[in-house]
Length: 405
Image (cartoon, rainbow, N blue to C red; front, top):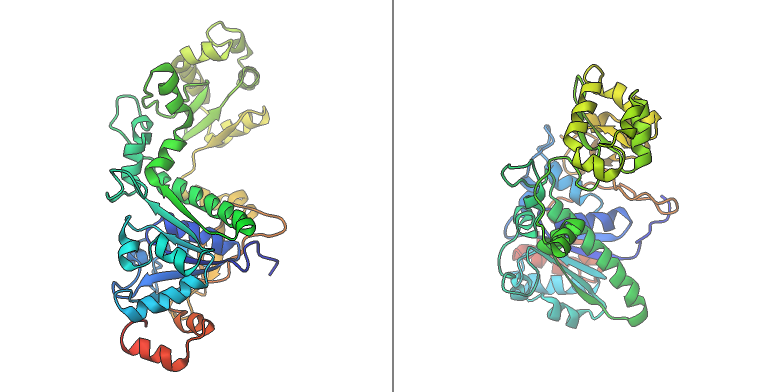
């Protein structure tokens, strides 16, 4: 394998669900030694049983996708012996990621202050619904709550419709990306200072930040944005349209774009019409312009429309469902957004390889790599703790009393 960007960095992934595991996945794909910690007493991560599942083995592909390339440890932190084992793991780590409700790690004896005492160089990243402080910090927060309270549901959907969440978990994903960036920045600074850092990322904050121009519209124009369907309020035609077989989108952002689009449609006069001659005019008459484009496309397939408009240099594309994404060779093969990992060694009923989503970050000198399935519960307990100096006899004792499996 080629050199891995984060080789030598050890990350403890003390997370469940989506935001936290996604951070650990990023680091594992880039070569970090990511150790997936799971609670032995509860039987591991909740999403180990989440759908979708591989049909022969019953493996959760939700779990497999987010936890590929990681090693696995399972301990009982209600026992002092389990706490001792975990403390030694903390001492060996560069990063700890946790997405528990604020206060849980402190009650377990491994909050930021306690972990900093064990390892002053530790970068400790906490992801939660509302953050580690403030009147809402104690509240549980999931993606839906973040989209609701961060503002994004108020601008998603069609005019007059019920508030709508984004189809993907944008609160979790924004938070994961924010935490990943903060961890890397903290590791960079640690090289200078020798000191770790406590990172506090909230799902709600992440959505608010992602509201960008929409929030500026309220702050500086006094107008709270409302849903506009697929239409952008800043330009036109910038929307979804209907061909004879399906929908497609056009993102015409400039006057030059519209001139070229009009010519490609065989209607160059549209670009000279006072109703469509510039961006402000097209915005005011966007609905009428959409009807014209829909009529033009009504006797053409999406593929035909896309070919015509693309040749004119206008941003255009079909609206893919998951099936079409998976059949697009540029996405799947050229950009490697579907990749294979070997199936877990303890699941012979599984196929030899499992398909997971590729990492969207492409790097020439240090590409992301995919070499290991998600770990079984506590799969690497023995290897990891032997490397930390524990003997076979000690580990046998911990297994006997249930502190580890």
